[in-house]
Length: 103
Image 1 (cartoon, rainbow, N blue to C red):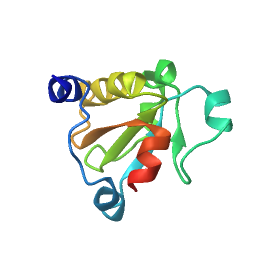
Image 2 (image 1 turned 120 degrees about the horizontal axis):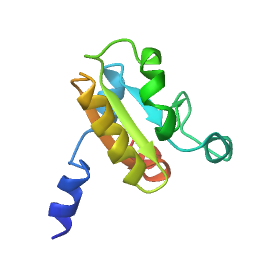
Image 3 (image 1 turned 90 degrees about the vertical axis):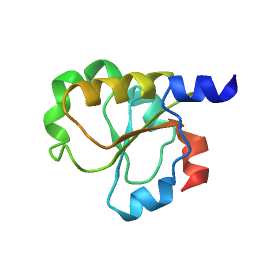
């Protein structure tokens, strides 16, 4: 059951550290105030409700992108938005603090 939920939200078993070595971008989709309260070093903050109109900030559609938020819900939505706009290598990293421990 837990694996089914993880797959539903795109939280597959991924080697995030390896993706970073490949040049992955960490996209934090929380609000600016949440991001300002703590975030992963060198991550980019585009709140999920502003992602569609800010896709130009993510120029390379083949570059790995790891989405994160507080719990994994908004990052799952962001992953879908990106994939629906032609981004090919998108991974839902879930909650930012958990992701930070994996990299």
